[in-house]
Image: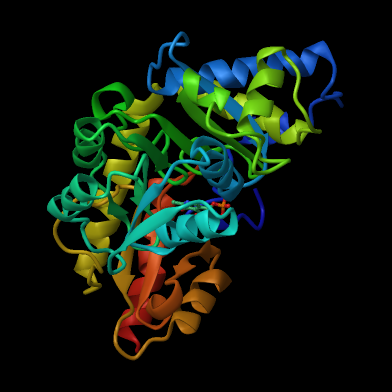
Length: 364
Ligand SMILES: Cc1ncc(COP(=O)(O)O)c(C=O)c1O
């Protein structure tokens, strides 16, 4: 394709031509049986990503970005009498606090430096002493830095203290290991346009079925983001609002392709290999990784900007040569940049990226 941009930002991702073609399928009405079949198929395929049994879990799809799904999960699942413990070590953990605040949900945020590992002993001491806490929320892959949080460890604390475990898996669903039953994940929120390689505009929440009943809420906290309402309607093959029909058609195609390419195991292996290549090339030209030690995702790597180079200079040179990278957020904007490795990119794209980066680094 001419003028192809290689997207190395953490979503939206480069599409395969198969997914792109699904965007221009014949027009369809979201209230007709043909769309109901698409919606039902997407919901089923989402459960299959991690082999979840349909008797225990359900997926609800929304039109919106990942934030809509995370906000729907928090607004719908924490009851009026509940209290949410938020474990934050980046922008997206902090965003969950803002959501809880916006809805007036009782919450406590354990705030850590961006990229820090969340100390389980400290989490346990809060869970042991604050009996009001009913739910715990964390980001799986904190895209701010590439930190992969320890869902197994946090999940086992949730099980021990009988807390409901909510996960923002927006930038990891389908591309990292997630053992729902073993780790006690009660619900997770994610979107179509990251590890599943769909188009932006579709998001979803997967949860244990009983959560969709919202026994602790007198009425929905949000009119549009009420998961109980979505669940009721989608179980009846309908949906409360107009879906982004074309985006869903492309999402269904992306999920079919995902399965045919070998599902979650194959995608994890692909990302691990790509991330390893990126980190090796980076090391060979003297770029230093921002995180050292602990679990790292294989979806995104944050690097320090080389001395003497601003982000704008690195970004603009790469952009001129057909690559989009991502800036650091907040206070990290002056010191790091990020390279994600999702989507339809090739080994050759990565090789060419590092040719440009090498020129930049050598000619500083
Ligand atoms: C972990 C995480 N949560 C939430 C979001 C927000 O998603 P969106 O920008 O699709 O609303 C992102 C976006 O990158 C993310 O990485």
